Length: 206
Image 1 (cartoon, rainbow, N blue to C red):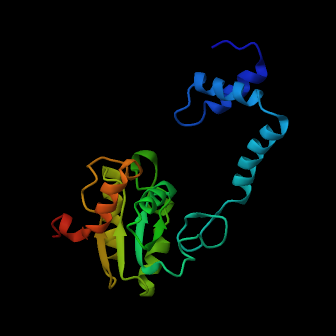
Image 2: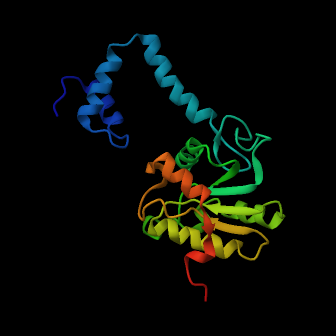
Image 3: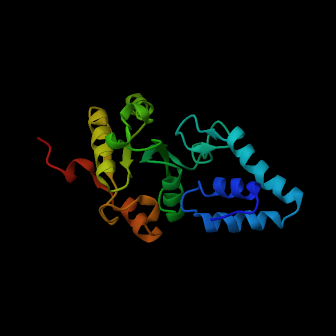
């Protein structure tokens, strides 16, 4: 794609770095912004700078937050002893949209993936173990994507938590094998949470 302006080319290149955005879509974004007022463009860019500089992570569950504790953890109506383990913020949003879960979350920040160089120490697993050892948790629901990496992470967490006095469950397989959690429809995902099963029942423990 040829550009008559180096400035437009640079802007298009930056937009095309976003997931799923090709050069043509990026060009439409740039041309749209050129038609906006200077104040609107400044507000647009400043919102992302503010996001990057001011966004925090909940001290309790590692979810994104504007404060020290996210809205879920600080909500007195949520069941603090019921913890749903998810990969990232997208899964929190997906489960919240089902309106079927009244506990709290623990965001791992990823899943174990040796191919990508991601190991247990790169994830928020130790803080989950600390919660389990404190005796304040009654049940941990592992709600990770039903992929090989998700199952590997589930098993690792199960091994780390099984010595503690709590129930370890996993979402029901209403979510198809290999599916990412965020793409599951709300009804299916909601039923998977409600109809969760004991994790140890999903495999033969030797």
